[in-house]
Length: 360
Image (cartoon, one colour):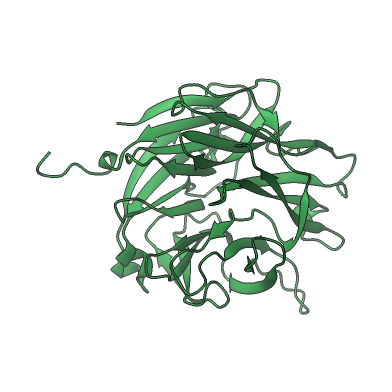
């Protein structure tokens, strides 16, 4: 039902926070390497690709130069995302963070940079600066159906104190109508004092409405949350729960069937010790009606466990995924499991893994 395969493992360094794009038959996987999840003294963004649906992968190659931190004010690379553009290029966006509190404290910086490839990820451009501020950006989403086809849309999050000294987790959008040459933003997406909303994932529905799904980071096992936009991401309204419990770092997209897939880390919360966090990676199948629903009671999902991290100090759950024209779905995540450090692992399955019809 679910086939697992290794993507990249190097027992000398930690691999984490992958994403994936599809160009023809080539799957491109980007990820971060560092000494440990909690040690960013050295960071570099890497890439590998497969042309045989995950059976073999190329030796990892750098997208970015390595960054070495000598102190907390020095920057590190964080979470890369990759998009296959219609013109044949690939674009990676990655946040570069410096300062205390993931750059949220006074003096910290949260910048975002783009890297382009026009040869399928073999070589990459120099870093292209953007005005996008925040951490853990969503991948560059290219709009197709609404009033702004071709618009590039990116989200990122901050948790900085306001003029009253209150720290509220806020997510913002930036958009470009000229393929990244200039950007407009920030456009406020969501933020509420009683919630820790972060790691937004955009989903464009066939009628052009946008949904942004969020992780809620209070370690209470809360559902994913979502908000809505009808103007290409400029303004957002509504904030409702989606019945995807304990959802961390959702990655949402449309399937060829018209259904919606959301992959994510299942994190029920509770006592925050390293030996019992980030153990599971799940996939949720839902539909457009549920994504558009303005209340939790009007939505439904099916949840498929993809993997469980057996390590003494488990760490897994950030994902990326693609679907081939014949319907096969491939997901990548990072996981410790049987390795001494984080490794990148892949999964292949079809939508039938979620349900068997009565006629089958």
